[in-house]
Image (cartoon, rainbow, N blue to C red; front, side):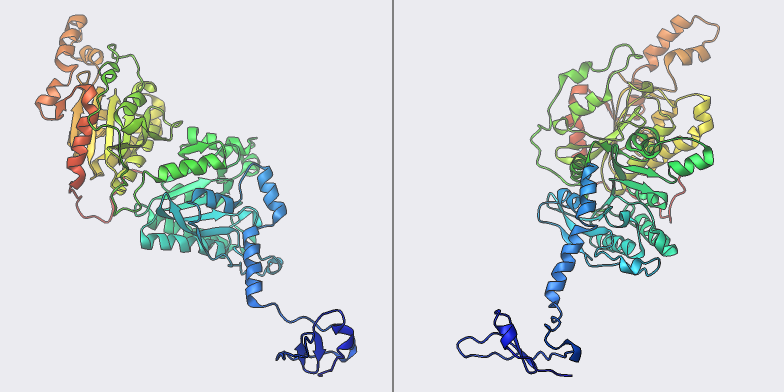
Length: 558
């Protein structure tokens, strides 16, 4: 029914007066504007103000976007801050260049209607996705929001992540995932599990095509751990990030072990014991800064060369201290990191996995402004021997460098593979073969410098000329042999004057001369000239062309 209202009561307070079938503003200077809005009134509501018209779409849209920005709300954001953690959105803006973030799917909501979930919908559905830049270079990012359903992964949550990964693959840009999630959204049952599998599939397809970095900034449990595990590098935050397949409660039920989250899957555990993670930092701010630093070393995809920076460190800079850094006593340790720092640009070395398998050092550096991967034995730890953990650590890093066109420089001081029943029973044969496989398969420029010992099978494995090494140098202190002089003489000269025979053996074999005569090393160089020689070789090898025989894929001894 259409009712007519008197204007007297309403118009006196300066509000619109209702006349007939239209709404008219309070008359001014005799003018009257007509609107086409028809008002339908309940006959029992005569004398009351009519219901307001629906809000314009732009107003509703603005409210939804503000709601998406708030995530789980002010109270949950405060709880996040009280834990010393940033929100998902704050993390994205700190990771990316200021003003560069372009968000995708901010209004997406879940579609679950079970367990009352249809009444609990928050725009964005617990993950912020989009693209931006780091130091001007493009990157795609997703950041899980713990304030929204504990960051749990739903079907639509997974679709948002898959969307940015698909886009990143199309344009050839890296993906960085900021993980802070309680796991699968139980309310959605198999739909959330399917979402995880979709993400895993894209992780696998993107592997070796675009760099993938995972930053664990909260819980990451159950099936959720396998997405970061497939990515190239994992960063964790001490005392606030955790990764485990089954949590402490399940462990206690099954094995009767009392263990905390930190002990079971914290940053220290995974960077020092399990080798799951690569870098640990003290807080959210530090880890995001470190991720930005690593990003600068990486190419955008597998078709690009590594980025090049302007270099002010002289190419032919010589450091005389290198001539004396190797001790005269072959059993006395020294720090191989000092050698690396004296050779690379500006002594800047970005070490990866510094707390795990310390007997092998890996990381990124620059030579004349160009990114290189560094692999080096560390005489300070286990005398530089290769063991199971070092082989796995080195093998994966070499394969990453090869996948993304990053030249590899290897510094050798290795007396062999670590002996013992623990290593043999643990599978040192299989795991050691991973490092061998990685070096043999690699087609990027491979340069090696033998600083002291290069014994036995470890000599072969570590970028030897026999595994298509491009340039192999030895310092005058190098020893290339099947084993150390004492052990060799005890076998060869059993029952004879060992002291005399050992001295004779050392004069003949405890130096790089025999390998040089056979062409297994290209030159015996003065240590102080190492930097200049390597940079010169890298320049020549920039256009190296080498390919492996066609195959679907190799069968690396996993």
